[in-house]
Amino acid sequence: MSHPNRAPRPIVRCTLLVSALAAGATACGSGGHPLAARPYDASDQVVFAGFPDGGRKADPDKPLEITVKDSEGPLTDVTAVDAAGRFVAGELAADGRRWHSTEPLAANAHYTVRVSTEDDDGAPGRRVFTFDTGAPVSKKRLDVTFGPDAGTYGVGQPVTAELSRPVKDPAQRAVVERGLKVESTPAVPGAWHWVDDKELHYRPQEYWPAHARIRVRSTLDGIKIGDRLWGAPAKDLDLRIGDKVVAVTDASSHWMTVYKNGEEINSIPVTTGKPGFETRNGVKVVLGKEYYVRMRGTTVGISAGSSEAYDLPVYWATRVTWSGEYVHAAPWSVASQGSANVSHGCTGMSTGNAAWFFENVRRGDVVKVVNSYGDDMEPFGNGFGDWNVPWKKWKEGSALTTKQEAPGAEQRLTPEAV
Image (cartoon, rainbow, N blue to C red; front, side, top):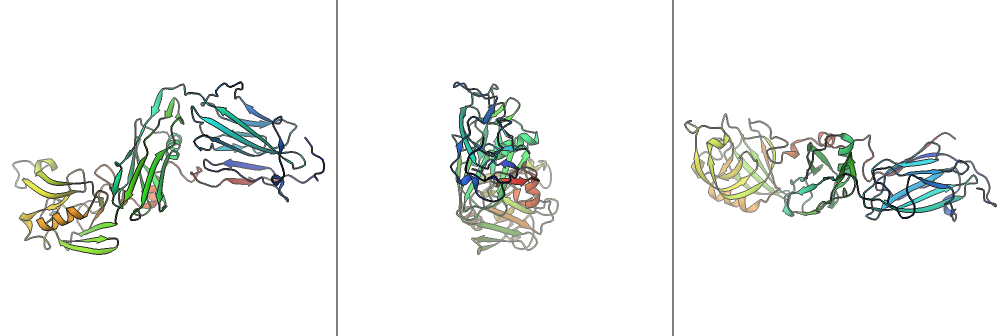
């Protein structure tokens, strides 16, 4: 198709990658701005291959494919978005004559597709196409449960995502991860990390900012994840972050220093694990608080008949590991607090100091132990040791590697030789 009164101009062909969040792209060409002109109707040029007409619903299991007729000019831009605002990633062929989606369509969704073309004279054409997808054939659904419960937490609290089914394939993991959104105010860089096939953790590069607000949501509903596996609806999660409270225990000096928003607010004499029961080094996160706990040596592998056996009522207990490490009142060891390590791994302090600590920390606050002869805190499985994983290694646990286009990435235009 040719339009009068337009001077011919050379055309540069482009390869276009439409990102999952991008709203559009500018045609690639030499000289002028052809898309600024009023576009002509390109309905007779553009073909939506394999998609039904007459009101029938499209199969979400099939890719979206758009081509132009052999005698017509190339495609310059394609965007496809559903009613929920989810854009479909796609790729334009090197010759500019075919575009196809590179990620699954959603089931039971209404899509709007906007296609831009240009003729031999550089005049822009446009076609807008809408269609609906039907229900997935498969009944297998992937449920996602976010954690922790809604509420206010400390700056060290990771976000968790529990999956109802294992996801092992890297490509399927990438689909899942793209659909799990974490938004914070103020915004900070962060990433998901696959703990195992059914659990992911999300944390920022540094601790959350004090008083931040966090919203967690899933866009996987109706999205195909793998063969006969589709995403299900998930409940959104809203979190608030409190003051930045960090307690640092130096096992060699036997003192704990507590900081609030960067300022020291207390210094407490403590005792930590004695030889053979050394307290774990590293960053831990407060998991909960229990006014009273009955502590028995048998729960940590000490036999009842051993000289190390104990069975004690313990008060003002702040838990930092699932295996039983607490910060708690230890009135029986006050003489050693500040001078020697005599516990079986917990951090003990006077009843008054333990009550103060209990009242001034919340779930998600940070407890860091340094200069202990103990092992390092486990990254996963015994609480939240997530912060002991260096940021570079943490990002390696994400399925969205540098070889894949991450959510929010800008569109890329790669000109080819004329």
